[in-house]
Length: 204
Ligand SMILES: CSCCC(=O)C(=O)COP(=O)(O)O
Ligand SMILES: [Zn+2]
Image (cartoon, rainbow, N blue to C red):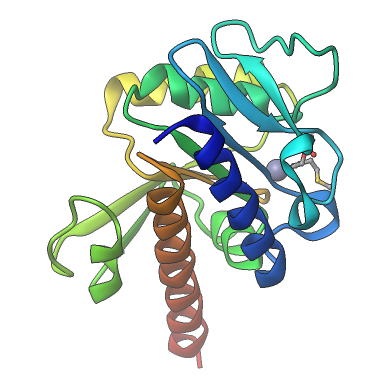
């Protein structure tokens, strides 16, 4: 599928994310890969629920530079890191959901473990609720280069699939195309909601 079609699908995904309330107050950023060298990233500071194709900027994956001179997302360095680390990743979605924000703060350890849910199978490669899903949780950082280095270091040591949490900040996830990235986002968010509700009820 050409990147033009993927960009149209990404715009649809952004509207869906906005309607879900997962990108409040300009939070979140989204991208698709064009090829090995370039991706299209949302412009910084815009309401991500009402973007058009004109609100996406071409960015060099190797350098984070935007040839247009316009300002791509403040979190450009995380998108390009994912495209460098995972050649099969072609779409990246970053959202500020309440569940991701709160659960990442409740998780004091470097990883969130989730098991026992049928919906784990919404994530590619997962075949049973009996497996334990491991989602890394990285401390948030305003220094995106430093944050990207920590994530790259983690990926050298441990499997990094589907996505990661940024503590007190949100979820970044990806897929082979926009449809898979959307499914991973919806599946992970469902699992986070279940985990949150279970924890609340278990404290009663
Ligand atoms: C009020 S959102 C704070 C910045 C952020 O975390 C985000 O996801 C949006 O930043 P961008 O530069 O992509 O608009
Ligand atoms: Zn963010």
